Image (cartoon, rainbow, N blue to C red; front, side, top):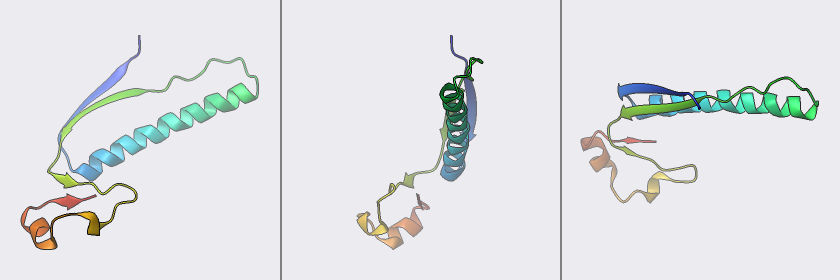
Length: 89
């Protein structure tokens, strides 16, 4: 049975939650890379297990543009964004 690390982050800034997920993703990718290197070298030692996480959090409303999005794609103006305390990521 897999172990899953649970973290209740309560209310957190969107970027903080994003960065935390990116950190743990990078760690798991490094583990997978080491396992792949072992496999390519035909080493018989035991594979490292990746770690599983479950984060529970809440953040203020955020407009996410995605990797190829642009501010011009939003259907609201800058004044609206300023009054609603929304954050664009």
